[in-house]
Image 1 (spheres, rainbow, N blue to C red):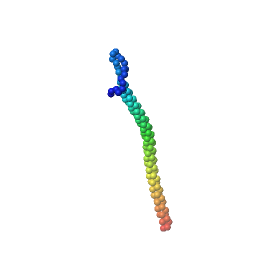
Image 2: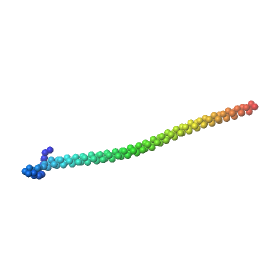
Image 3: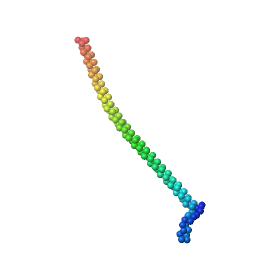
Image 4: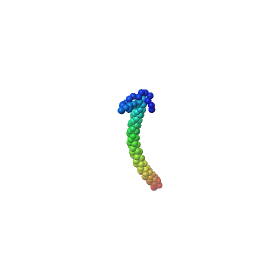
Length: 119
């Protein structure tokens, strides 16, 4: 870049004059300020992203814990279902046996009634 404003003497070294272009320095300072602003914005963005990531991790942990509880409840329900199914089978077996016993008693009663009529 070239200077668009004055050049001033920065120092004298022997017979050599060291100069600085004010516009060039101003341009560099502006670029530096923009760069610093960009770095700060990027830093803020990263900080926000890290905060959001932490929140997502916490939510995921809660979801995982809830899933673990639900899985345990599902397993418990399956176990209860198996026990109930076995209980139903046992009750059906007992019912059938009592039904057979009842029918046997009826047959025996009918036979006695027939023998009493005939006898």
